[in-house]
Each structure stands twice: as structure tokens, then as C-alpha cells.
Image 1 (cartoon, one colour):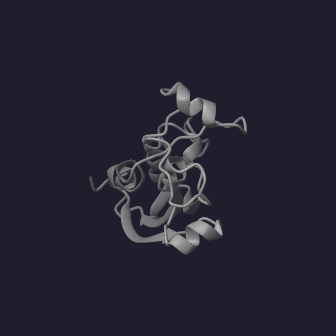
Image 2: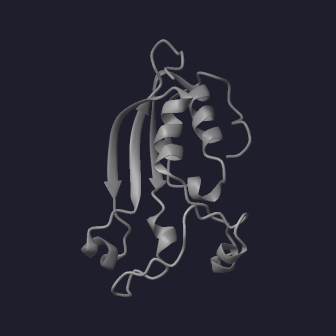
Length: 145
């Protein structure tokens, strides 16, 4: 996801982008590439982590304890690197990077949705941990912003 997509411009009618930005440091590149490879009128459906999962280590502890600061970037914070025990490096991203990045790339936001983790404690607390968006590349094919 950090390299140019191996597709020609204006190739796809739809892109389904599951929650995966947490594995890359720079999400602006992803949104720019999505814009580039979508056909005019094409749709981006994107899932995104809103960062809450990085703040709290254990959703079963009450009251909830904010254990980490944002942004969560283990490449810049050695203490955060120590928290990653599964071998993956993960990053939090802001609303500005996630939704604002889609707009900055030229996409038009047409819908948003908040969702919950499968953790029953988080669901019970009514704390959404994910965002989803639907964005469209303008028919004229020119960036709007």
C-alpha cells in the first residue's frame, strides 16, 4: 500500500478498502492512489480504525484506562513498539488523515458510518472503534480540493 498501485489510471468502478490503514504510516498515499485508479463516478468504500483501539490496552478493565497516547506510531515512540507483541507494526490515524485525506485527494464523501469492535465490553459501553466511508470520484475526473 505504500507503493504506487500496479494499475492504470481510471481503471476501477469500485474499490473496497477494508480496515488496513493501521498497517501503514502514511495514508495520504493510499487515498491519492485510490483516486487515481478509480474511474470518474467510481466509488471507494473504506473501513478505518478511529484510534480508540490504540488508546486502551484492555477493554475489560473498568473504568476504562487510557494507557497510550495518540498518535500511536511505534517507529517514533519506542515505548509503543514494546506494546506490539504479534510482530506487526501498527499506526493510529486521525479523522483529518482518514476522512480529510479522501477529500484532499479529490474524492467526494457521500456517506459515513461508525462501527463497533466485536468486543462485547466495548459494544456495551457504546464506544465505536471504527469508521466507514463511501466516497465518489467526481464524474469530471478533476480533483475538487
